[in-house]
Length: 366
Image 1 (cartoon, rainbow, N blue to C red):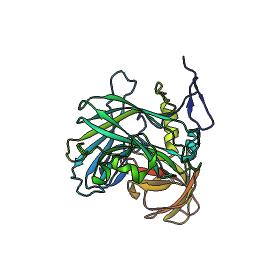
Image 2 (cartoon, rainbow, N blue to C red):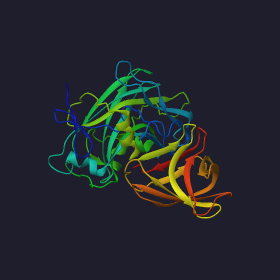
Image 3 (spheres, rainbow, N blue to C red):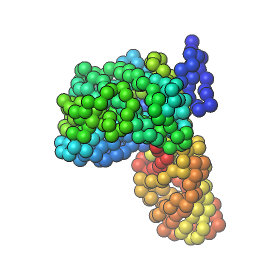
Image 4 (cartoon, helix red, strand yellow):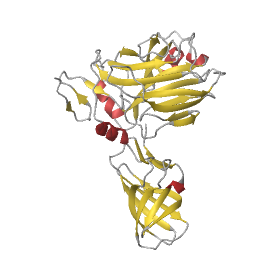
């Protein structure tokens, strides 16, 4: 039985010394839930998964109860086109950001040195049509990329993809908490992204490589509303060998995801977020102690201010306005107002309202 431990960066190391960097690769955690009507870029479905597009297509991202039989997975990242586009300009592109790593977590790759390590990516994939796609590893510190192609041979059929990428001896990472490496799966693009002759599995500037991201003969994803794409079992590891997927507990994966996104509410119950006090008859200040240290001071968004409420002297009162006063990776201070009924100096609890759509999202995504 393989024995694992946790190293100083919080990454699983099995008994053979392989470092496997899985970030919700089993697609178990989905704090945002289904997100519809995405144009441009957006996160949705399983945590850490996003779509980036510069055309007029519209997409829904969700967590699907769909995975390859016998694989040990039960969920997948599901992308569905709900409004099609023709990729009418050269710069139009659609790609999935399957995962992203902080620069400081990429230092063990030793890129930018003569000892640069190879990286192996494995994942299960399914598409509504058979085609060839490109998966690029992108170093955002140096603006370099390495792309390889894989072919889905049968429509609506799960298959395992394994790709090994050469190490980059020319450029490394900045060793900070900003975006270091991303895994970008290209689904379609205009002429800027097709027809290139750049060498595959070769690190070069993104501008030199991008014309090879999409095969010129490919069906461009999003040109029909019947197009769907699913991914699960994503794992990135150091070396040239794909090892067994290292499943984590849901609790462990949730904590890792909360470094980048924390969602309160969304369950149809009152969810206590923080504590504070009334500053006047209609104003308040509350402090949220975050369950984990986030990557950076987060931005805040709500389903609607009125979906949040105060519990004050046995009365629940909807919020009319909310402002972030201060945010750091460990705590947040928010101020806001209600219509009336508060008593200055009195204690309040900050809640989501008792509706399934009531949410407060703190976002520190890369």
